[in-house]
Structure formats: structure tokens, C-alpha cells
Length: 250
Image 1 (cartoon, rainbow, N blue to C red):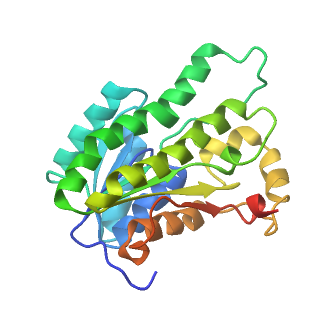
Image 2 (image 1 turned 90 degrees about the horizontal axis):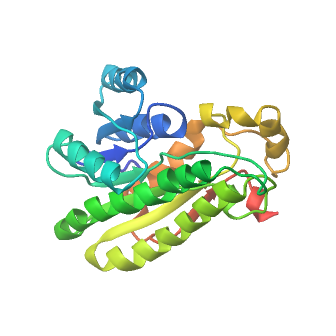
């Protein structure tokens, strides 16, 4: 980025106690934003806040588990309070990766995936975007996945939930753009995070299929998220930025 500062802005990053979310929280804080770290694990959340503060940034932690409208509204309320009254940047990063064949896929797992990956961010945006629109400025960045664009065996449910998220990104861009709120998405490829550990050696095998051929670090994805949240991307909305080593290009 060309030195854009996020000083004076507040940011809520869901699922930010580890992985891409944590790296994003750190990056936004480095750019000057007051970051609200949010996640289920209090110990990891407080450690993330402590690390950001040790680096000279400003952060607070809100504990919560997203999964439905009620939890989303609760997180929105508490995060806004912790941020001093409003949220300027929302990064919808919290998600569930659940893999398995279609026959016999547990209904409770299906519902949990769509609850966390789609329903919760839908209602979180419903709570926070109107206030952004009233102020005439805001940025929302959704974290999706290359599995939303590719047919991957055993990833039907996960990919479908994120493909719907891609469409929500475009729908929200149309809905809130006239009020000055930009909505974009980042679509990561293979990234070395705790959530990707379920793939085992498969992570490296997937990465080998991309032109760049390696597994990304969370910080590489966080940089793209921060770009879309910043004024450097002031004329970008409704876009899905692939950060996948070129995997969806071939």
C-alpha cells in the first residue's frame, strides 16, 4: 500500500485469535486502526491483543462464537461498544471448514457450516452496515475461499457456503455502495493456518497445483485484506480478489 493510514478508524475482525484473522488484526493495527479482536478462545484473544499493544497498536478483545442471528447481533453490539461506539471496517473472517462426501454428510455439520460461514456474517453486516451508511463511509471485507470457485471433491458444503458468500459480497456492494460503503472479498488459496491442518499433506499437494506452487503465509492474505479495507482501494467494490497463487487462473 502507498502508506495509507487507518488512524482514527475502528476495525472488527471476526475469528481473529489465530491464522488469517490474527494476521489481519495485526496488519490493520500496524496501519493505525483500533482493532477489535474477536473469537471463542479468551486466552488466545488476550494474547493477540497483548502482542498488538506491545507493538504500539491499539486493540481490545471481544469473546464470542458466531453461528446465528442472535450471536451476530450480540457481537456487533459488544464490539461497537469496545470500539468507542462504531465500527468503520468489518472483516468477516470467522469460518468453519468441514469436509466430507455428500452421501451421509451430517445435517448438524451442514447447518453449522452455513450458520458460521453465511448466516452469522449476513446478520453482522445487517447490524453494522447501516451505521456505516449513515456516516457515509465504511469498508467490509469478506474472507471466502478458492473452493467457492472450483469443484473439489469432499468440499461441496464448505465450497457452497463460501460461493454464496461471494454473491453476498456483490449484493451488498450494490446495496450499500450508494451510501459510501465498499464491500469486497478476498479468496485465499492454500494457506498455512490451524484450520488447514485437517488437510495434512494434502495442503502441500493442493498448493503444488498452483502456478506459484507453495503454501501461503497468513500475512500474505492479510496484506490483501488490508488493501481492500484502505483508501487505496477507494474505487473498488463488489470485487473478489483471488489470493491463491494463481490456482483459479489455470
